[in-house]
Amino acid sequence: MATRGKRTKKRARATRASTKRAKAPDAGARRQLTEYRRKRDFAVTPEPSDTAPETPAKRAPGARGHLRFVIQKHAATSLHFDLRLELDGVMKSWAVPKGPSLDPSVKRLAMQVEDHPIAYNTFEGTIPEDEYGGGTVMLWDRGTYFPDEADGADHETVVRRGLEQGKLSITFEGERLRGSFALVRTDSGAKPKWLLIKHRDDTARRGYDIAADIDTSVESGRTMDEIARGSSDVWHSDRGPGSATRRRRRAPPAAAVDLAELAIEPMQPTPRKRLAAREGWSFEPAPDGTRALAYVTPDAATLMDGRGRARGGWPQITDALQALAQRARTSFVLDGAVSSDEEGATYHVWDLLLRDGDVLLDEPWQERRAALESLFGRRRVPDVVLVETAADPADARALAEERGWTAVRARKHDGPYTPGRDSAAWLEQRLQA
Image (tube, rainbow, N blue to C red; front, side):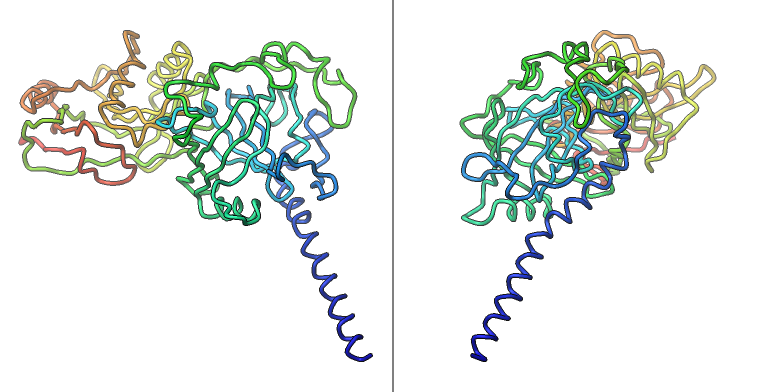
């Protein structure tokens, strides 16, 4: 009897421990949603205020127990897509400026943001313009996902481990998005930055931009404009339809999300005593002046120095860059230098690091240069000029001497952009006085 009593006590302790373990994800989910609640006034915004995590009894996972995902198109201060993955009772969320791509050669920036409640999965409508994230939200895609390398393990465990390690391979089974993708963390700072990349499989489509091609809701079939106009159809978590009284302003399309928060460290050239002409290289005069990266959207433009500090004093340059973004209906990050003389300041641009959410750092310089020239095209941008390139270092030197500059540089055609490091694909020769 004593033995049976001990076994009973052990089972009771095990049951209590199991109960605690079962409750842990819910408690964790509540903590994870603290930031979501802090940013919102639920007396005003129609977003779901019920942030209680779902219990296993309430959940309705997809086929074979796969986890849910949604992608919402969001025209807030800037237009972007929100990718949300179910994990531990909440939706892990990333802002993807240009949305997913089915082209494996395209890397899409994904900025990790606060977790959202699972109730957000059905949200389509308009958030009042004065509220956090104010603007129109479209339910662009939905479905289930699973980790590619589960090997029989619990899916949430594998996804959790992948996110902790900064590399996750998953397969989407959505109404629009299907196939295998990678999420790769490139910066684990306060606002982690990731890349969303399509794997090469049967669902890959080179040159096809699914996010730009499909512009209707998977739920209602409406466009963003139709959702914005349909105030009576605004989804509310705790109020009846039509109770929102304020309308949003239309955001400029194709603007990027918090570009300046990327804080890319400038690549540095490697010093050389002499530059010689050789196949696979181009040459450029090196402007003297203040190194500056330009973070530009149709809404704003900021110049940052090599230490990531915002530089004022050149409003004519930032105004001109913002006007370019508005005309081109795009957003971008440039690298260059600002020089000043008696006639004023000029921004000399020599590289393009990001455009419309496409991260170009790993792309060959020759492709980045072509994209840079395409961005400017025949548009006249006051006080902003592209640095010329030449096939021979003597020509680049002649240009530098003509302008009174003190260096020339060599660019390897297939060289990537390596932030914060000296690059063997970017060489610099100082000229003798």
